[in-house]
Image 1: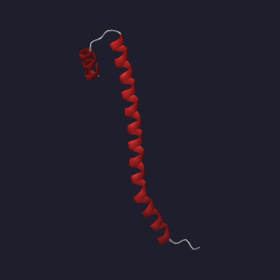
Image 2: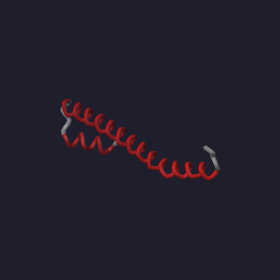
Image 3: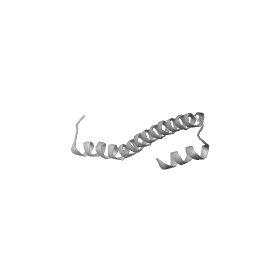
Image 4: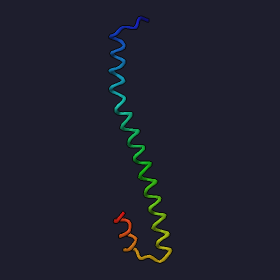
Length: 66
C-alpha cells in the first residue's frame, strides 16, 4: 500500500471530525462525576447538621452562602 499525502490528509480530516466529539464526551463525563461527588458530599454534610439539631432553613442558608 502506497501512503500518499492525500491519504494521510484524509485520515487527519477524519480524525479532526471525531476528536471534538470525543473531547465533549470526556468533558461531560468529568462534569457529571464532579457534580455527583459534590452533591453526595453536601447531602452527607446537611444530614450531619440536621442530626446535630440545625433547622432546615439554617442548613439551606449555609448551603447557599458557600
